[in-house]
Image (cartoon, rainbow, N blue to C red):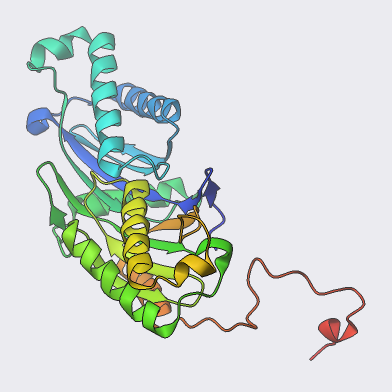
Length: 294
């Protein structure tokens, strides 16, 4: 599991996005190192104020690249909107001449986001990578909305209430159909999924204006309602109005190699009852067989 997994009340997540956007009319504004460093410090400060974190940032005269981690409740599109609008307001205050040059109150235009793994401390190497990505002409897999071009995929995992093995073969098949239908109805792209007795994996993509928390609520809420209607015996197995546990795991999946690995893992995933997990108790100290060399 990634070492940068974070926690909220109901989620564990490892979410990193790559954003790039340009200045209005793509004019070369940030022409000196002092100006570029000021923009970087400002964006980092804004991110912290809104419970986000910037990993690596590269500011060029007419555009910038940055990697950003945001909680599941903040949609990628909303994160970009916060950074761009708040930075515009403050930069106009710091540099009044910019307001005269850019009428309409807008300093930035457009946005582009894709998911990337967190930089591993090699800022210089990663900055070179960002420059190459910015100059690349490849648009493979890019999707577009009104104000964004994006290539973002997520790996989601959730479990039934009490992690009970209630998802029989018939229910697994039906849940797979429901998930595909929900994604199609709400404009998401379900790449791969796997349903086991006591947990669900989904590998999917959805537009940047949708937060992960919203997407998970739709997937879990609609599927739970339909399964309870079609399988009334679930009411006896799980008392109360909830089929799924409130928590979930979410991670962004970046480059094609990582996506292929996640896809292959989900497609070949089959959980065995005796398979140890993170929640398995440690072996007892008196059990010498557990420590016997092989």
